[in-house]
Amino acid sequence: MGLDIIDKTYKKLSIQVSLNGLSFCSFNTLENKPTILKNIYFDDFQKGTKIEDLFLEVFKNNPTLTEKHDEIVIIHNNNLSTFVPIALFDEEFMGSYLQYNTKVFDSDFFAFDTLENYQMNNVYIPYVNMNNFFIDQFGAFNYKHSSTILVTKLLALGNNDENKKMFVHLSKSHFEIIVVQNRKLILYNSFEFETPEDFIYYILFTAEQLLLNPENFKLELLGSVSETDEYFKIAYKYVRNCNLFVDDKKFEDFSEYQNREYFILLNS
Image 1: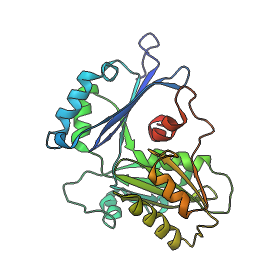
Image 2: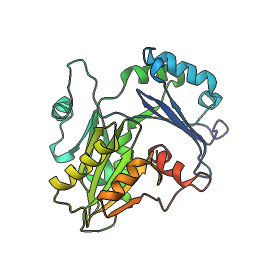
Image 3: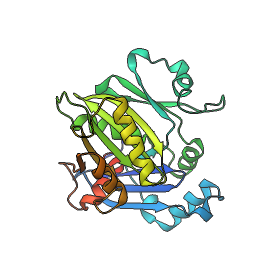
């Protein structure tokens, strides 16, 4: 049953969660624009604390999270996901798709998102304990995987370009490589990294596997990256056509850096 018009707040809340923290965005749905954007990292000394207790503290300190919203979306950000063509997908065997790139246990809970326009599903393992926390807080909500939003948006931005293009999305401790061609997903993978040398190694190795020449292919960086940091500098050094991603439909109330850093959240 939908909300009566007198009960509507015309607000939507998206929360992106990981083991390192959470970020959230409140949207004004009448004007289709974000109004509040915030990122909260958990320090190393907090890591021994139950994630539910850390989240509870965040909720206490951020009143926006307890305000009424018409729609709530939880975004799970981890590397426990894989894309499967719909023609090969069987809901009874979701664990089998993930066993090639992560350790799968009998007790794992599997979910999938459908990328309607691209004939594929994203199979993943959501954080069940986090979902349980949000059930206690909100009751009903929708959830999806961060890579579903990332890949869907990047494919939608593409044109009928026959040349392969690489996007790299950086987070604090991992990054994703997405290669697209002619509005089709050629490759998606997630890598953990610590140094700029790790970072460029995986980019150049992936390029080599796909027969992409660093002198020719286009590389765009998004997520937590700016022109002054070492990750952009080393990519710019080894890949001739390297640029920071700029979304034509960026939100003007936020900086270009924020539009890149919160790309997934803002497009949720």
